[in-house]
Structure formats: structure tokens, C-alpha cells
Length: 524
Image (tube, rainbow, N blue to C red; front, side, top):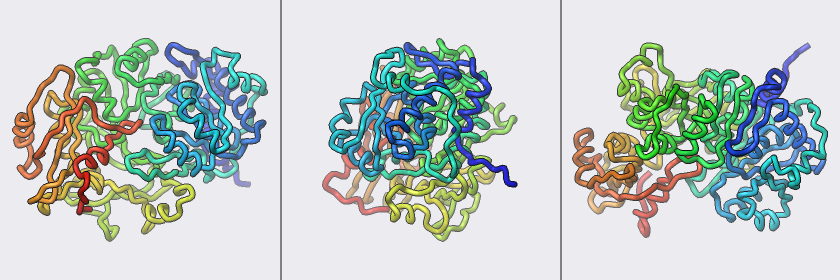
């Protein structure tokens, strides 16, 4: 008789609740903390409250910063047999209306700090709203709902591991967000990989610097529970708040986009660490200088790569013991590459338009494509986009990359971000990497701008470290030392900050739109 049970990341949570009841499960700086026993009771109460209200098996959305209440929903909602729809915390009411309507949400769990942003939208759509606040306020309506329920253990509700556990909207770097259906199976496999590559165990203290709504915090909403680790939630991601949490709670691990790494290494805020902290970074290609700066402070950085559609992580910048001993500049250059496929990622290849692997010469461009257990179930209510993304039996990432002789994949650009100047392809990521090497540069984004002769040329948007000054001529001279003349930015725009999604990805389309206003970009 087969003894298979459905794969689900809820199994990791169940294991933590069973084996580590007296361990600290969740800490919110300045707020409550919970043991695993207490956390389990809250999970079961929330699951029963959802079922009692008639929303078991329905789509339930959460809109919350990285709070203990928001974290609770990632186990409590699917434990009720429902599908969780995590919402980006930085959207407009119009964007929330589209996503809530498209996802057919019936119940919305919202943090009290964001309630006003969606109050009218939810009312207009006929969606019931439960407002989450501080768990110490036992008199609140949300806490009363939990307290009214039995807190004894509930069996896992999963019958089909290929059923949807979360419906995650793409990050918003385009104007057409799509709802990605992640399954119990794919998210479980991703969570296992996260534990393995992140080297997490019961002594791990994991700081939630990555927005949990972004691809389920890369699995961090589930995986640390499986080994009895402690979660430290961080509602507001600022350098001072992150460093305070690191010092006060003994943080050992965190995940962050490269923009957050820039924040942590900014000389105005940077603090050398008393012990090493493991950091996983993804979201956009990190640059070698940022990695070197993080290492100098005591952070051990590993780059991972993936997309929401791949559950999400599929490659890791894995280093051998010998490579770990290399001088920082050489080691950082290796970490800055996206690396090799993870052990459960399936096939991750760089293919040409005929779906043939490109040679491993570090020069020939192709598109990263994936097929395997981590690829999404599809886009919710969007069969056309699903068919296009999975054309030819591969998931098409849209990321342009090369394969090096050692098998490492390195992203050179997004398809839409390659600059074609006078027939020459220019990688915006390559130019950005050189700009980041200038000590005055905190952030650099390179996009195409129109040019009468060449069609388009590189334009660099620059944010400087606090107190630093640099001229366009200085930056041009710096870039010319490293790159061919046609790759040098022809114009520089200096800004205090550059537009990003809530997950830390630069929104290049916003900057590009400024430059191309009233003109049609006739490339790609």
C-alpha cells in the first residue's frame, strides 16, 4: 500500500510545533514574542476562525508589513484549506482593486497600519475585512475572533500537493501584474532548498528584511520553522532598525535585495558585526563591490536567483571550499554571478531562440529557461499568458545570460533592458557594475535614452553615498577605464533615490519612460 503523503511547506511548520514547543518561534522588536507552542495555538485558532466564517477553501488575501500577524497568515490561511493571496504593501487603491477582483478574494486580512488604503476598495468589492493589530491588545476584534476558537491541533488539510497554496502577483516592474499559482509541492521543494543552502538549524535567528509578500519571502515564511529557528519580524526596513535587531536578538541569517545591501553598507549607517551573518540576496543582479563591502562588515553573502513563477529560487552562486578562501575581489566576482542550478530546481538552461543550449564560452547570449518541479502551475485566469510563458515546454524567464566554461550562469540583462546602440548590444547590468565600483556611487541604474544618430545610447541614473560628490566627467572617465567607448553613458541624472518595487527591484521602466516621453522606442 503506498504511503505517500502530499508535499506541503505546512509539514515544516507542523514539525517545528511538534519538536520545539518551548523554543522562541517569533519575535517582533518592540512587540510580542511567541514560543512554538503559543504560535501553534494561534495558527489553529486562525484556521478555525476562517473556516467558521465560511471562507475555508476560498481565496483569502493578506496586506501587511513584516509583522507577526502577517507571518501568521502564511500558515493559518492554508491550514484552513484556503489559498493565500499576499498583496504588495506599496500599491495604489486602483491596483489593489484590480488584484483583489482578479484573484476573486472573499476575505482580506489587513494590518491596522494599511487599513485605510483598502477600506473603500474592499467595501466596493463586497470583501469582508479583518483588521490585525498588536497581539497584546486582546480586546481587538481580530484577537477576539482568535480567542473564540479552539486552539487544539488541527490535521494538515492538504489532499493534493499540486493544489494552489498561494496566489502571488508579479512584482510590478511592468504594468500588467499576473497572479502566479504556487503549489504546495513547489513551495515545499523550494523551502527545503532554502534550509539546505542557507545552512539553517535550531540555533538560527532569521531576520525578515525581505518583504514576506514577495514570493512568500523566498520561502522564509515556512522554512525556518522546520528546524526550530527563531523568526524576527521587521515591519520597517531601515538600516538602523536592521542593525538594532541584529544586535538585540542575535540574528544569524537574513535575505535582502541588493538595494537593501546598499543601505546596510552605506557609510552613514554601516556597523561592523561582532559575528558573521549569512545573507542571501536576489531580486536583481548584485554588483561585486556591494558584495565586497558586505563581506568587509562581516556579512557572508550568497547570491540566489529565481522568479515568482519558479517558486521562486532556482540557482545559487555556490562556491567550493577553495573558492571561499580566495581574496575578496575574486570571491565577490564569483558570487555576483547567478551560479548553478539548485539541487531541486530541475533543468535550468540558457537557450537560443531555437531552444538549443548556448556554448559555455561566457560570451554567447541566450535566455534562461526552466523546466521542472518548481515551475508555476500557471497564471490565474490568464491562459494566454500562461501558454506564452511555457511555450516549447520551458518556462521563459526573459533574462538574457551567458554560460561560463565552469557552468556558471551570469545574467547580462532583461530582454527589454538590453540597449541596442548603432547595432551594438550593450548590457545595462555590465555598465552598472562598473559604476558601482566608483566609491561615491550608492545606486546606479542604466537605461536606454533616445539618440538621433545611434537610435539609443546608455543613460545612467545615479544616487550617491551621503556626503559624496562626483561629476559626470568623473564617472565617464571611470567607466572608460573599464569598458569600450560605446558602452559609456552619454548622460547622467543624479537623484536622492531611485524608484524601486517593494521587493527592492529597480523600476527601470519608470526611468526609461521619462527619457522616451512622446517617442516610440523602436527596439526589442
